Length: 369
Image 1 (spheres, one colour):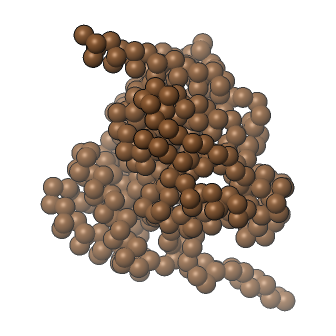
Image 2 (image 1 turned 180 degrees about the horizontal axis):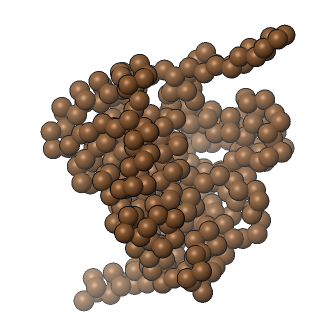
């Protein structure tokens, strides 16, 4: 397997956690005799400092000609005074649109060893495993018209939530296809009692469901879904939702895992797939070597699964992560006073690599017998 991967560490802790994800991918490539080519490019705040734009043309061109993009995080308080189109986050939205990756997959897993890290009761989160499928290129984030009218006596801001049947249908099919390989249940989230876009969403998803008779479909309003996520997360298998709702719900779902630093994501469906942890750039802890790299490493596992189609390699990385957590290793965001094995970013990355090596040695020994 040969892959060309554009690495965009971004800002803040993005540099630290992305480095660990690359280490894991390099180890996988060396062990399984794959060829992964990594090239690093600027995006976000660091790109603004160097080139005056959050997404330089060279970065965009490199991403468009790669098999996958591995992104860290973008953003910093020093850029908050810029107009919206010039901020680091604008570069990320432009990149998503250019890549055409319309389906964002966010797995939410409650590891048994981290049940006490959740602010929810262990018996509530234990065993929860949810795949959030978020539409990524429509809705309020991209709808036009948008803007702020600044008058002499008043100001008015406006955004447009807009969806077409085609946009809804294509992401719905991603969700139903994913459900076939899981517990075969899709919960579609909307606000159909208020929003016309949600009414079209519900109609379209219901029609698409007819092509997947093996999958059970139910609908929830977004406010009810937000409640059920913290009251009974085990009721969910695949959550299908539009852009804004998915952004909010997937961050809320971090309470199930114990930390936002545990969440990975894959943006697929376009010419180039994009992989990134869900957390932000966390400038308050950047450079201290204490950030949780597991969201970035889990994103690397998703890259192996969806772009490289290397399912065994993806599972090995995920199993290595689980073993590290089961052994009691934690970054500070996961510390609830129960572990003496508090480790830094690089140390956790090293533990994952060592665990991965043990898994591979065991497999080789088994096949040798």
